[in-house]
Image 1 (spheres, rainbow, N blue to C red):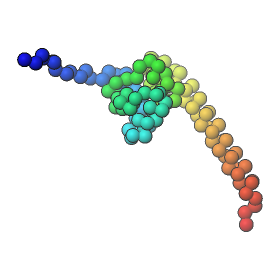
Image 2 (cartoon, helix red, strand yellow; image 1 turned 120 degrees about the horizontal axis):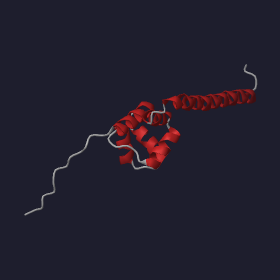
Image 3 (tube, rainbow, N blue to C red; image 1 turned 135 degrees about the horizontal axis):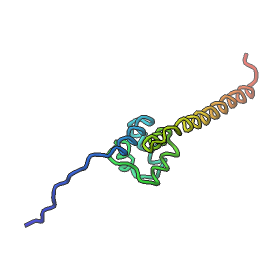
Image 4 (cartoon, one colour; image 1 turned 90 degrees about the vertical axis):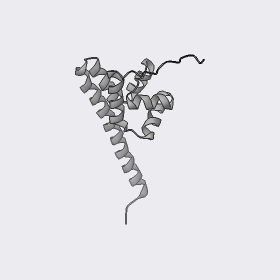
Length: 121
């Protein structure tokens, strides 16, 4: 007689996992590219990245920190869950500042490239 292996009962995802998943999907979408992006940010396996994006499992401590470094949505979710909502505008301002600096650099690059081409005829 074979030993009874028991029934597999999956517990429903907790609020943390659901909300991190929503944040990641909101920022990256639910494509395979999103999975690859999360893997690149964290060094996690494909299965882990899928679980986080699906909201079935949440990232552990270090992976959460790595996600928060890259994702404004994840850090905002963590702050909201920690009831530190007052800090979220600072996160948004920093992200906007970085975007503005990148945009200004790109605009400068266009002007430099345009000047090297000479006058248009």
